[in-house]
Length: 60
Image (tube, rainbow, N blue to C red; front, side, top):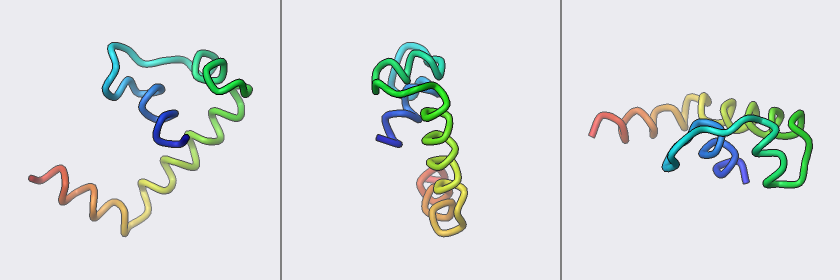
C-alpha cells in the first residue's frame, strides 16, 4: 500500500501525480491518512540501510 501511495502521489509510472484527496478516494481513507502513509514510506526510504540500496540502484 505504501508503494502504491508513493507512486500515485509522485506520478511514478503514471501520466500525472495525484492529490492527497484523489489517492484517499482510491483507498477509501481520508487525505490525512494518506499523508501519514506517505510520510511513513518516505521515512523508511530515508533510513540509512535503504538509502544505500537506493543509491547503488541509481548509480547503475
